[in-house]
Image (cartoon, rainbow, N blue to C red):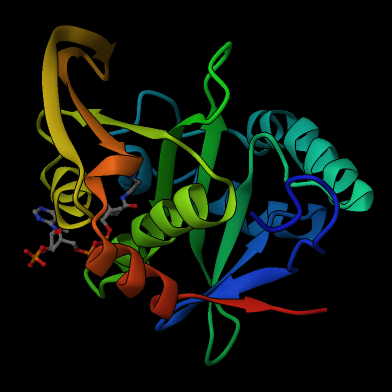
Length: 209
Ligand SMILES: CC(C)(COP(=O)(O)OP(=O)(O)OC[C@H]1O[C@@H](n2cnc3c(N)ncnc32)[C@H](O)[C@@H]1OP(=O)(O)O)[C@@H](O)C(=O)NCCC(=O)NCCS
C-alpha cells in the first residue's frame, strides 16, 4: 500500500495504456471548469452544467486537502485525478474516488471524459485506473458506482471494468425536467481474482518525481 502509512513515497501519478493520471492541482481547474460547463458532458450528471465559480468552489477544498496529504507523504482520503494523454499531455477529463463517510476503505467512483475524447476507450481506462488505485494502492475493500438508468455509456464502462449490478433506486434523481432511476453497482476486493489483479498491476505504472 504505497504511502498509506507515510513510509513509502506516494507517486506523482500513474500511466495507463494511453492516459496519464495525476493528482488534481490548481492549474488543472480551468480545463475542468470548461468541461463541466458543457451541456453535453453534464447530460446524465445530477449536477451541472456549472458556472466556473461553482466548479472552482467545489474542487478548491479537494485540491487543498490532496496537496496537504501528499506533503505529509500520505494518500489522500478523496483522491481526484486529472487525465491527460500520455502522448501530448492534452486534457482528457478527470476521475475520482470519494471516501464513504464512516466506512474506511469504501469509495464512490466518478469519471468525466471531455466530449472531444469520447468513444476512444478513455472512460474504460479511467474506470480501470480507479479499480487499480483503489485495490492495489489504497487497499480498499469496496467500490460503489452509480449512474442514471438511461446512461448507456457509463453503465457499459462499469460493466467492462467488472462492476456487479446491485440494484435500482426508482425516480432517484429529478433533473432536467424528468425523473431518473439510479442504477447501483459495486465491486468488492474479493471479486478480483489473481488473473484480474495481475492484469491491473501490469496495466498501470507509477510516475516517479
Ligand atoms: C460515459 C463516459 C465516461 C464514456 O466514456 P468513453 O471514453 O466515451 O467510453 P469508452 O470509449 O471507454 O466506451 C466504453 C463502452 O461504452 C460504450 N459507450 C460509450 N458511450 C456510449 C453511449 N453514449 N451510448 C452507448 N454506449 C456507449 C462504448 O461503445 C464502449 O462499449 P464497447 O466496448 O462494448 O463497444 C463519457 O461519455 C463521459 O464522461 N460522459 C460525460 C460525463 C459522465 O456522464 N460521466 C459518468 C457519470 S455516471
